[in-house]
Image 1 (tube, rainbow, N blue to C red):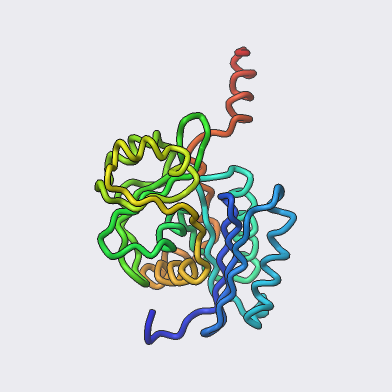
Image 2 (cartoon, rainbow, N blue to C red):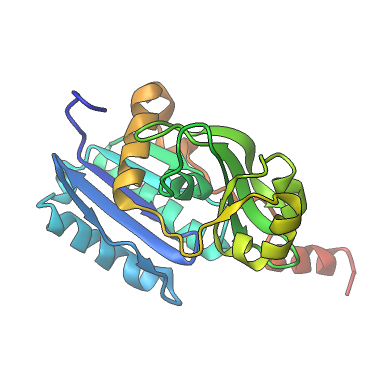
Length: 240
């Protein structure tokens, strides 16, 4: 986006253990990324307000919104996607839905061409994750394995042995990754970067602006049914 006038942008993601809230006005960037509270909804709009105030951006001046769509925490995804859709509808601005793993992938500083494996702990011996090929600063990583619900071994099967690995799911299944990817590099403490997330959202929008005109096209990416849905289905079918 060098040489282009940057848009007044807000990015929200509450699908993981970190709440990502970032805003940009001109050259000013605020990053309110913080460990998630027990209730995302209790802190989300306060963090949005603080992020906007930090860069002197009135909510009516927002030109573009980005939101992490998951997969990850079911509740967190619902909260952030619902909030972002509502804001986009009220303000009449484009909304860019971004897989949450991609927000982490652009934040790890990987060199162009490096494989980046992002995995969030999904319980039940599985992870919510994706595999990317880094594009370098300001670029859009290439998706090698789509965001989804995986066994860690399956996700790792598509990666080069020296892949960068990050996320609490990667840490939990470190032994599996050591066996599958003997030269991998583990990023012990990972958090999404507000500045990188803002750059990514604007890059995605500028690449295909017509895709992001309607907020109604941005939907949660759950990747699996919730436990509550499974229990309800069992009750309807007469199961335990």
